[in-house]
Length: 276
Length: 358
Image 1 (tube, each protein chain N blue to C red):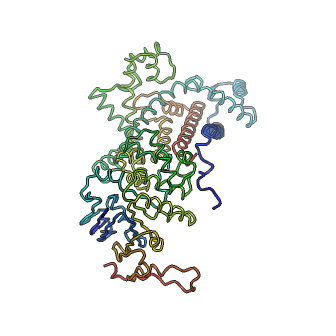
Image 2 (image 1 turned 135 degrees about the vertical axis):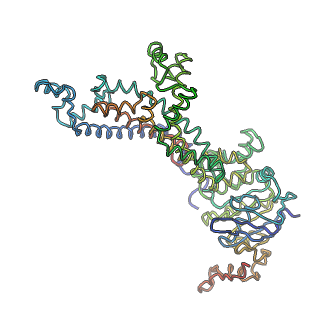
Image 3 (image 1 turned 45 degrees about the vertical axis):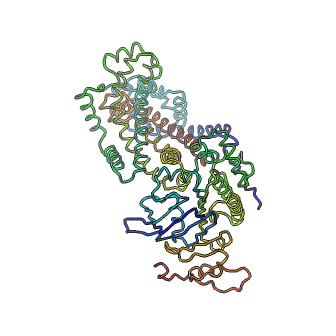
């Protein structure tokens, strides 16, 4: 069953220096599966993710031949309908909890905000649910964390708080935009396995955006490789090593192998025609 | 992994709320004391350096040498410098700032009469500046480039660029002279002025508060009609400043990632702006508001002159023209103390609003 279907998505910015096309005709569809989007900085992967939530700040503009989420036309939905979707059914985890959590609000207030404001729950019930959500991301001593401010948490903990906050309404689709890139390597695996477990248990769709092709290959069912605002290759994650497109091959080859023979790493080839 | 990632940093503010705050206030008070001591040193030195002989200013040109010497000893001017400074500080701490040559009263008593008028005016003006300036800045920041933004920009620019004496005269002409909507110069109508001196116990020196405490509502309304124009004129300038700063702080906050988080959570736009962003805007804005308030508390000579407002600004200026050094220096000390105090309070508020600064 298709959860999200996107056809010919374009994101353009009209700036004083001229028009910048961040995303140029991206199409994909997604069921309750894990879709990875891989690409370099500036390839348009983040903009693709945010377009689904219609959270591109002006002067950015979203256009698409079709963008439908579970029967709702995202291109025609009113702002109110979008807010209802955002709060309940589509969530997003961003790169760095240092910036994505409000620095002057207590964690508890940020976790319970949706429950209290949107669902109208009492302070007590909302608090219980928030603590449950913190336990689900394996935070010990959730009561203490509820009273803490974001700067008092480590990066890994901040990101787990972020995941907890986004999963509280039990969304159907989670967009994870480089969720572990800002974390220490030791913590990355931990956060990923928590995310993996929750997404699997709850059977939600996942769009996993990353620059790390191997990570995406391990973690997702299907992979889109983006280059300069376009999808250059789409393939099953298990067939990653059989990728045909020279850009994807380039991404695969530019990683050193532990214990492999030591030779200069090949530079990434960027042929102009791939962007056409 | 060595550290337990689930333990928040030990500096967590929620562990030790009150003692921490007390320590903070204690430290602040100490800084305050040192700053004021420095301020007294400066005014003391100025008092010795200016080419006005304090003895001559009191005894007059025709005094005999004996009279001159007697006054010099009485003022303690025959003592060594360090001792003079110690006496000066000792007196100042006890509220003795010397005697005004012009009014022949204690400078401290004079200031107690004049300062409340300035305090009243500056407070209302700042209130006006904040209540209008902050929302205007927020509206402009959320609608950049639209007509709302343009209007806020133009009104703000006018506030910056119009000389306050001209604006004050114009306001008096229109709202008092032509329309007759408000009271004229002075803090009260002449009739009320007399009644105020006789009937209202001077609890704070601020007319609005004293008349309200005494239940003199007719007088209270009259005082409002007099203060509204000068406080609006002063407040306009501070509003212009506050709205520009709010706009720029707000633009900055709205570009932050936590704003996207709030939107992803499905929060309505008003809540994103007025709760999530504004809480962060308040952090730098507190300093801006405090500086603008402290500036107004120094007393604004031009506005006070135009509106015949007996405030600190006109007191110090009059003293300066009369060569009344004790009054000038005493006024300077008070202005300095007020300035430092307002800054300290804003520092404390800053820490209350921003958990990272605690």
